[in-house]
Length: 154
Image 1 (tube, rainbow, N blue to C red):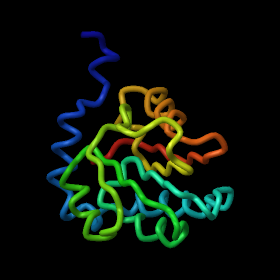
Image 2: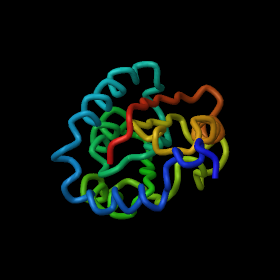
Image 3: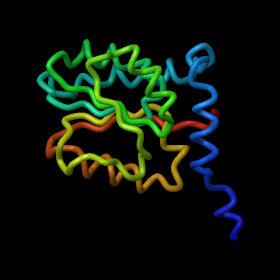
């Protein structure tokens, strides 16, 4: 194993950490709220008539109700690595669709989304290129991707 490989996140450990933290996560997620709010304020470029909005790394779904308010006609798809996080998110937005998956391999059709919203998920990926390529793949031509990345913290 090379030194670089040792620095890559172990997805099984990441999943377990977030699964354990799911019920209490929002009480300690101040950074996530601040960056997520910052991202939401920058969605003015997005089409108001978006049909499909994908929140990659949605965690507890904290931003799902606000995304639903901003895009009232859209179907919201919440994607997270930890099923326990999605379970908390379902309580926030019953009308959403919830997919347990890795940001580096989205189980979504090509060109299906009008918007990809991702708040602090890229640091949990083995490379930045893989999730960004997935975002580009699922975005429709003219779609909008917004993402923030910061230091790791479970």
